[in-house]
Length: 349
Length: 180
Image (tube, chains in turn green, purple):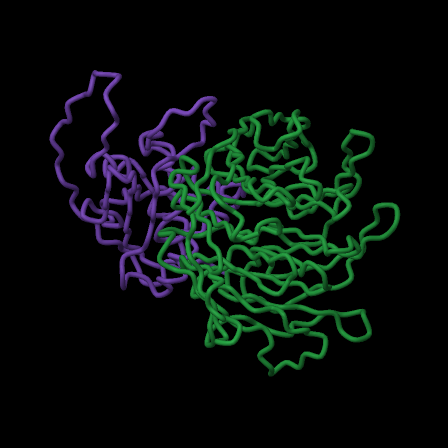
């Protein structure tokens, strides 16, 4: 088994912290909060596991309501922040200074999630207005709406891109996960698959999604207290609507006993971390012993649990992009926490 | 369009007499809440019938409390002190009460303001609510029971609602003390 050691508790936000996101290099962690600000945290030593994390900058004035989510562009130069004020702000890091360079308007109400594609050419946002927007990133910090994706029947909680291909996945209060790809002519997007009941699917709000490193697997988490793992190795470019292309692999249940708000699949160690309203963080790995691919299913085991990771709800967990032992979390207690995984990781890496 | 009377003649229930509670003068004692105490908090949630039932503005003629309307009763409060967990089950006065989510929001806001944080954290963000609070409508009491419960338990929606000036004003009016 593994355990988590608290490296440092980062204090500064004046309201609940909703999300954290690591810059691609892992040097900077950004957190966003109900206090309408983002904070950038950096470690003054070379080691992420030393307790020398400090707040380097506070981003204020970009939003006048809660900032719900944030995401770095793949080159680490741009930061996108999604807010309940119905806008998405773009921040540029130039010579150590951070500037608000664009504000993306269009959603009718709260924007709940934002995600850059793997090349940084596209940005996706989603909202309580039930829509997903895809923005074309143009020179000079111009963002043009390419497509408005309708299909969800309730607010959309999360969007995330496949790590290598231009495939977008969205999760909703309507209990479904939808998979979107570009049409042949490149101008429009369509839903090629809905991962939901009556097949294997979540029975309540789906809060978050995360792909593994090569994009062959996706994990989702829900208010139904389960995590679900999906086989996403199938190429979707030839998809026709009635095919089942991405398949359900496993359901991980019986661990969290309140809403699971966040799940993140590490690209450095292959482990899945989850954070929930039961105040705990849990870590899972796929059992390698079984020839699960042949059986069409997989089994997952819990390797660690951190009870009372925060004094109240854990809203977000994010693995460090390169260091397999570092995990960040955000909570309703207003704190960001940096954790170190203790134990043998050789068998998972 | 004139707003229709959803429930023009609400049944008004007698409220129970309560024995005086002894004041706890020891400031260092651990806060141990009990059901009655939480019920007392909700008892103060004086929601005008105009808001709750008639859905007509500016008619504060019938300032009944939640208890008098039997919206919340002591039996409907489930408190687990050890787990710092409260479940409040309320009964909307009519099956199609469109105000059920607002009532739920009022109950949550009132509890957020009255329940003490269980742990002192420094520097303490003042908003902290360390009680887990679940608010539901009573089984069979509302036509859209599952939908109402789902909405009331979605903390992102609750957070967004509490940033909405119109909803906040409505909640504030609901929570106004009757004798102000």
